Image (tube, rainbow, N blue to C red):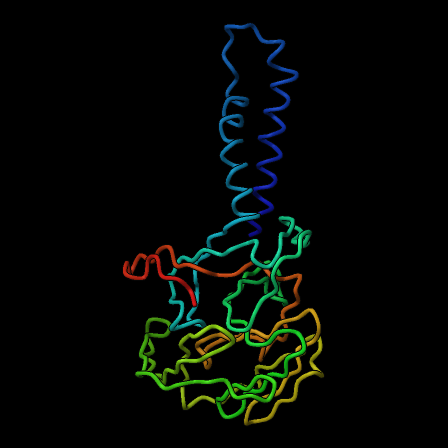
Amino acid sequence: MNFALIMLVLLIVTGGIWLLDKFVFRPKRAADAKEPWWIEYPKSFFPVILVVFLLRSFLVEPFKIPSGSMIPTLLVGDFILVNKFTYGVRLPVINTKVIDLNTPQRGEVMVFRYPDNPSLDYIKRVVGIPGDEIAYKGKRLTVNGKPVVADPESDFSYLEGGLNYISAKRFREQLGEHQHSIIINADSPPVQLAGVRPFPYRDNCEYNEDGFVCKVPAGHYFMMGDNRDSSSDSRYWGFVPDANIVGKAFLIWWNFGEFGRIGTRIN
């Protein structure tokens, strides 16, 4: 569902009725005549819809985390806020950038439109920026030939799908200026080769049983989940073009199951 498009349609309809009433219908009504309901309701909703549309389009948009691909940073059921202008101002609905500000940096958590189906929003961590060579061999991440620092932390356990109990190794990773935790299942391969699909610039990548090496093309980004062995990410469906960027995730504002997570900043 394209919520931005729905909001835009509602904005146009309610705003159009407000304008028609102001310049056409109101001058013809008697001073003591009551507004028809089909004018009163749209006029009441118009300012609310306008404020929500502007906030969601240009400032902050809320999202709910539906999967465990970003565990332990983000849990299923987290409600997060995404900064819509960090990476530039974009026109709503068509998502065209009109003002260029900052560019995504390694280690930032970013929401983007899924390249294979732009109607879906995905959230992952930026691992590679344009021009980077990303290697993931033997469960170790390397950027431009330099191994990414990953210090061991205490093990992490969680329920997957509410049925499977997963016990994983946790590491503290340093990507750019960002420190964050990742989890790894030692029994899983670095990449499920059968799951790798054709994608634009596929020839920039080399895969084998030990992992992969990819060269990030201009205007694109390489994304990975913090739950490295339970994440559908750039390893499988390719690079994220700049045009698909939605914004930078920065805050957990609600979680019905774990109130202690409310107000947690996303690193």
